[in-house]
Length: 503
Length: 120
Image (tube, rainbow over all chains, first blue to last red; front, side, top):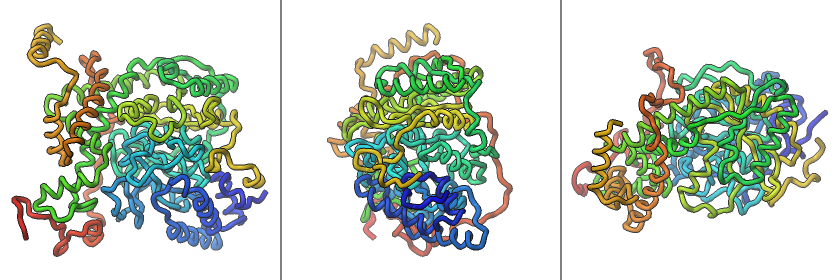
């Protein structure tokens, strides 16, 4: 069956790649279709901070020529992709959503960006984010927020809000985000897309502006588990430029259809029945558990006794690492520079003051305090001890079960300005943070609109370290149980059937 | 914790005014100076409130029994250092390294005077 690009917004990465290989359309036509969709949507959504049509067309021409010559190779041929704006891509700005880097042009390429384009992806642009990835709503971007494509009065989540929104609105098929405490999984839940934080070490962090170096991990967004697995195939593996990246020879698409029959999957009681979980979120977890059981999985309960302390451990470790990483912004080599300072001290202070927004200042100062003499022993060292306990909790749990299921976020997308107090905003990361502390992978799977708010709800599947294939397998099985519109029209609902073309 | 240590801690707490303030405005002013972030008086007051609130939420890790628990500073804890062969490889040419600043001189980064109020 041939595919035409009239259905572009709702086509999967795999369909586009196949259609290109079969000669149904050219890579150039795919770029045009993606640009048309961006043109129609992004004025209302503001997912992008920069469009890169020149780079996309240049890549398309290369692919079209390679196809004509019979040499086109790659797992993401002619698939429109976009990158969170903390990822260096030569010739693009890499602002991190901050005035500090407003005029910074990347002189080198992040490994994740290079791998997506080497696999044949068409780079459509750079995506909005909370400033330096500090936030859960994309409201702290210095360049204005991104709107949730399902309801533009609501936030898309964050910090990778632009990455989730661009995919949800059908502007691109795949995007990349980074996840330090839930920054892929929470926006994926808010925007109704699949978002995957792989195990720490699966994807190279080289060229991604660092936030919390022991917590950060790059991962893909897509509208299906299969597309996300395809992206991970392109992304995973050892990179000599990131010494924490690991060898990886797994084909993440290989086991997607194996199902969950005979698997043991656990509900974490303390996380699922926690205070503040909305009824529709709880209902989604219940229905997912029912579905897994129906498909042959054995459902059990496990305890993660120390997981309650994860949030406080994270808000020690994260800011300490951020404080250290953001000390590089000295206004000398790059970044915003205050002109006319009388000495270096004044230049440094005036530049950092002018360049960093409120949340960045809070985290930097908190980190500085927590690493201070005397305070270090009270918070930082215990936080790293707590990390040992949380990691052991997960190790023990995975001695008994293959995967865990829990909410990705306590509730659906909140309205702009609804959570203004920083402490309350931090609490919204309750379900995502503990696996950044432990290093495990986790995937948000959308389960359709919530019965109360009508906004996307998702569940989170967590697996043992470096068993990201298992997470994808469970998620792919679960995905088959849900039937709902995957693409937002950008004006408060799914894409009307008429504009979707035949599938 | 030994009994004497606990007693000392309690005594120590008694000698100070008990409040929920972890940080005073003066402390926050000092941290701002150390991290090279300028704050107006109004911003200083708000930052002091915010930081104290955030530090309040960190309490759980100070209340746990962590006696004898080893710290994990990194999620892939069992790895040893990764070394590469000592072979030179290409790096940025100078003009690329200098491309993101406007303050250069003779192929180097230019900074204002380090000491004093230089008016060059």
